[in-house]
Structure formats: C-alpha cells, structure tokens
Image (cartoon, rainbow, N blue to C red; front, side, top):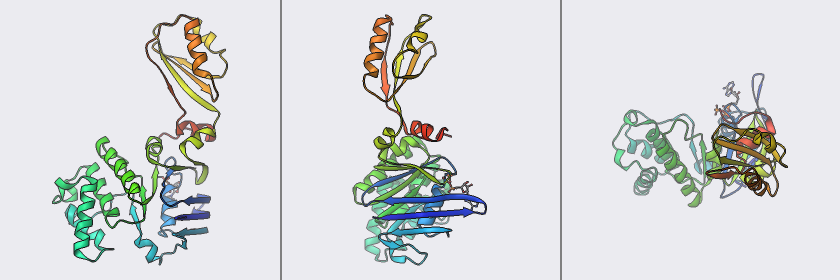
Length: 310
Ligand SMILES: Nc1ncnc2c1ncn2[C@@H]1O[C@H](COP(=O)(O)OP(=O)(O)OP(=O)(O)O)[C@@H](O)[C@H]1O
C-alpha cells in the first residue's frame, strides 16, 4: 500500500473538516479524491503530507508512519498544490531546476530531468520566460513540472486544472496518465467529475469530510438505482404523448422542451427497447436518439441529495 489513512479526524475549531477518514492508495493507481468545494480534499492531502497536525488517526506512506521528519518518504513524493508556488524572480527553466535540485544534486542527471519535465508539460518555447509572462494554463504547467521533475514514486496533485484553458487542461490530464504509465502512483483531487471519470482508476467521493463511496467509476454507478438517460430528438410532439410515456415501466422522469424528449430510467434491462417500441407505437417522427449512463454527479445526487456541480 502506498498510502494508508485510518480513522483520520481533523478539526478547525468547531468545524469537523475530516470525520474519521479511511483511505488506501494502492501502488500503480490513479486515485481520485472527488468532492465539492470545502469537502476536505486539501485538508486530507495536507495531513497525508504531514503539513498539518490532526486530532486523531494514523497515516502511513510507503508502509511507514508519516511524520514531519519522514525525509526519506518525502523525497519520493511530488506535490502539485492548488495555489501555484513558483519564484517570480526565476525563469521557467531556473524554477524547475531549483525544485529538482532539492532532490537531485548531480548536475548532469538534473539537466536531463529538467529538460524531460519541460518537454513533458510542453513548455519548450517558454524556458526563458518569467512566470509573470505566462498565461494561467502555462503557469499551472510550470507548477506541475516543478513538482514532478525529480521523478517521484508518488505524485499528489490538488485540483491542478482549476481555471485552466481547455488546451492546457488536456495537456495536464494526458501528462498525468503518462506519469502513471511510467510507474508513478497518483493521487488526484478535483471537483470536476468528468476529469476524475476520465483518468482515475479508483475514486473516493467525499462530502463534508466524510467518505460517501469508494470504487471504480462503474462500481460507484452500480451503487445507485438510476439507469440510463435516453434523449430523443423529436419536434412538436402531439398532446398526450408525455402523459402516456409517464406510464412506461422503469421510467423515473421525463421532460420535453419542444425539441428533445429526455427520459430517465431505473437501472435494468430493456429500457431502450421499450422506448423504441413506444416511439414506433406513437408514430413519433424522430431525428437522433442517444443514451447516456449515469454520471458521478448522479451518484453524488442520489447518495447525498445534492448536486456535486458548483
Ligand atoms: N485553515 C483553516 N481554518 C479554518 N477552516 C478551514 C481551514 N482550512 C480549511 N477550512 C475549512 O475546512 C473545510 C474543508 O476545506 P478543504 O480546503 O480541505 O476542502 P476542499 O475539498 O479542498 O475544498 P476546496 O477545493 O475549496 O479547497 C472547509 O469547510 C473549509 O472552509
């Protein structure tokens, strides 16, 4: 086990930020910590890194108790924090070289690693730029390069794509998958469920400092009773159709905006067949039809009664 957290309790005054959190990260996985703002993701990361004192619980990293003095373990951890933390007085190259130099003293080896990190985040054209001249997305990429250049075994990224343009976001997500392919274990926190679905092998959903559910995205979706959503493009449906649709077996809800008929079903077989039969029986002229499986937002909604999205 790369990280093991047992019964972690963290309070800020009267606020219970982590409520008996249990968490295990296995070697080689991209572990997603998903939760709305304020759910305790950053607090959990800071406790794991021993940056924050906690009230109760045990934390092990690489099989050893994690303390502020666990320098051997810390050497093998790369951290990319939510707030960009680079030196404005140093260029892109110098920043990455500085952070890498905290771990790698051999100059030749370090140069190779710094060059690799620059190529990895796609900052080759910006090596002589100062951070103030970089866009938000490029700055984030620099922040990531600084955290990973020394090739740590465990990489922790806390919301690395917040306020990032789509191009940089894709570059960052692809980069994380590649780092994992090269052997790093990743902990990735986000409140963007699509990102977590896209890259994480296992996901823990947090809310108010408590674990709501843990599993692969399919295991999480299996926890809820909701099945697929079927959208049918159909214009000017005649009155009465929606009322008859509501009687369909397995239907949870239905909507029509004059152009799209959206029907949500309970988990189970035969929903699409029944829908197609209904369309045929009602003689509905239709354009596109598509089905979507439940999202992690649906999982969050069904378990907590509220939306995961902001
Ligand atoms: N230093 C602090 N003092 C007091 N309360 C804090 C402190 N840091 C965090 N909190 C509170 O603890 C709770 C968890 O915050 P945390 O930052 O860990 O959540 P998060 O899931 O990382 O959210 P975000 O994505 O907004 O950072 C929140 O209610 C937050 O307001």
